[in-house]
Amino acid sequence: MEPIPALLSRTRVELSADFDFARPIRVSRAPGRLDVMGGIADYTGSLVCHLPLDRAAAVVLQERADRQLQIFSFNLFDEHKPFTFRMPLDALANQPAALLAREFAEPGRKWAAYVAGCLFVLHEQGFVNLRDPRVKGMNLALLSSVPMGAGVSSSAAIEVAAMMAFRDHFGLTRPAAGRSLRIANDSAIDPVRLASMCQSAENRIAGAPCGIMDQMTSCLGEAGMLLRMTCQPHKLHAPLAVPQGVRFVGINSNVRHSTGAPAYRRTRCAAFMGHAMILDQMRQIGAAAGRRLVRDPLNGYLANLDPDDYKRIFRPQLPELISGQTFLDQHTGALDPAARIEPDVEYAVRQALDHHVLEARRVQKFAGLLEEASAAQDPAKKGFALDRAGHLMYASHQSYTMDAMLGAPECDLLVQWVRQRERAGLYGARITGAGSGGTVAILADSGPRADGAIAEIMGEYARQTGHAPELFDGSSPGAWRVGTELICE
Image (cartoon, rainbow, N blue to C red; front, top):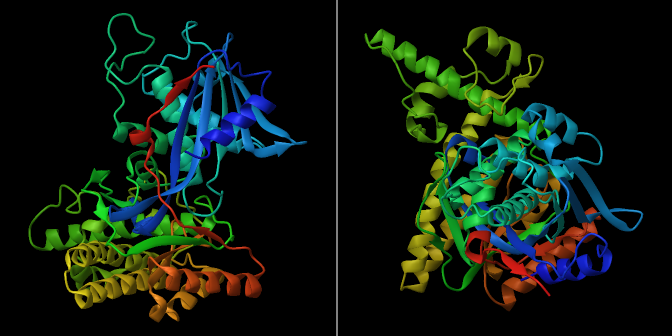
């Protein structure tokens, strides 16, 4: 599957001095994903529904004779050559995560953190001892058709493809027997552990406070199905079938976004600050009733708060705005290790919680409506369920803009034009992922009428904004189902 053939071809031609195709070379592939519903509510424990795309990252790996890690990227160029990163294995193994993160934050190095960070996590968690002289260095080359900054998990695709290659290269598919290169952890790596380690690499080495939904979809997604997961932390449910006759597509606005952007970080911080404030309210309510609160009734996840209780009991007590310093002075702290509260920043706590608490309910209803549409024998009932599901997508988009404050005018235009073409077989649309640009997900009929409407929207968007939109219209299996392949010519 693409982009494996293109990666192999370019590696043969452009990296022949580093890769010897007469010796074994391992190939892996992992797809990007379309966030259909759930989005940023993953980090507060919501259900999420994601589609693995046909766009993917591919990695080739070959062992070296020395102890150097060398990574090439065909997505970055330096004077018409693949961009190269090089580091000794000892340097990777002997530095703490925080120091590595600062090193990879240097100009021209951030991209390599998504690959090298995975190898670091394997070492840190005891699967591979990079200090052992028996561990040889590696050449890796990557090529991705998942556009960066489009909100379709380009980073997760690279991480999962790299981690799959490392996993099979080191034989981490089964418990170790006898003398091992591993430090202490002799268990095999299952897909959930693999996705979790990829998330750790992105959070701690690449410095992006993402949830786990992207890596889980890239690893375990099934072609043409929505991966359905409750992010507490990663409870998988049966895949959600897309009703016959409809599909999910994405339009890339080509307005770049980032999970490291200030708006995303503020909203994430505000959600966890609000959670801490609600726990304080619960303690006060319990104390007034003569009961002492010894644990979080929400089990650590804001998504477990009943929306009606939130609106009736807790919301009126939340501040619209609070400075980081005021929060730190009055409360014990946020519950998110990836959220750093900045004392001089104002956080819109009430709006952030409006989004997160109500989004969790929207996603649950959305999944139920898709199941109703799939089971319906009556076309009218099916159409009604799809229409309601589409309107939940519109509500999610509105909440992203007004409550989470992660909207973008260009994405608003795309959603507006989808809504104007509901009679052409377009049911709903919403901004995705971390928002602030990126991709809009659309629920649409499968057929020429909907195709024509989508083409009209993309044409109008290009004329009015000057941005070239990009269509994501296809799905492929996750990396775990595909596996890796060892080739030798």
